[in-house]
Length: 279
Image 1 (cartoon, rainbow, N blue to C red):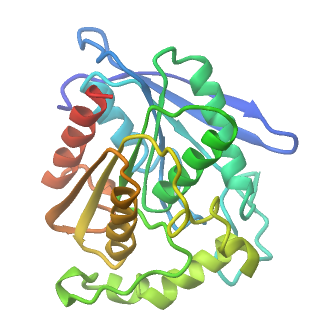
Image 2: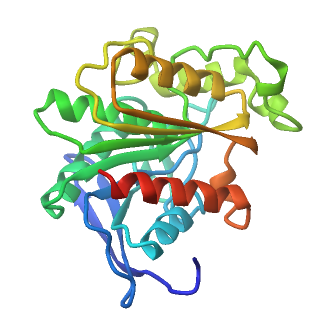
């Protein structure tokens, strides 16, 4: 899967009124036939306050999918300040911002990708990126746009993280502390910025009306405190009669897409590729 490098188009920067939105394009390399279908706009995770286009969860995922024939774009949305450090206003020369500014960036990227993708766009992401992708899907539909699908990998979608009842579904090792439900709730409040925003369907789509949500692929990690939200959101999509494919990868932990050498990385890439081929 890694023998042929994708041809990465030079990064492009789009202008918002007060910000810039970096966008990278990954096209299949020469000799790798492009799969007919939509372009995947992919968003990295990082708790809304960290992450970049260079981390494996963005760059390696996009490259691996391009090597399997998919056209992929990754967007560098604005990051919130780190929790408890609201005075931190910038990172690498870019201003930070809470909801709805990161979502504004994703919609700016969506419009650009859509303009260059005659077969449509799939919105997708991992962890916090999955939450942003779900919110962007709803907002795109509100604006009369029509995403072709959505892909969520170990995402969370609710303002308060549901608690896993089965101990086997909970995070292990250091993530028992860093991903404790109370810590995840602090992260969500930090991103939302206010109690009112916590309940906004465009901040956390879980628990809200999903309307005509497009066909969706959900891939969750087995041992992950965020799985409770991911599984619940999948159940909400199913109850809304959305065309849904839902997987829980056995033995996996959160953020496995940040470790390209793992078997589960390759498994998830193959799932996304196969599902996208049917879009």
